[in-house]
Image 1: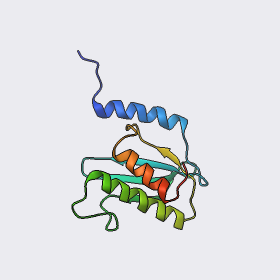
Image 2: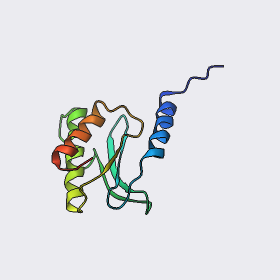
Image 3: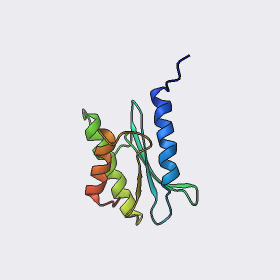
Image 4: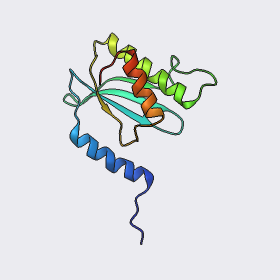
Length: 120
């Protein structure tokens, strides 16, 4: 019997290890990212209160750009998240990559959020 984990199970194992180390507060919420085949989702979470402060997805009307590729969409999601966070008075966040490699869409989202004004 094979003991290898599926790709998603391996990612979830890494995610649990990451979540053990980081925690979001009301002053510095956790920027959690989820990547699916169809979209990219990002949210700011206050772990102390157990609530989501802000959520953005690639299917939002403000994010969707016709004919754009995945990296362009990820950049749009990062910029929109940073703009909405600044409107709510949030400037510092803790980045939670959710077990994904810091590469591609995850990196594009993080870099665009930093360029728009969020501090990790």
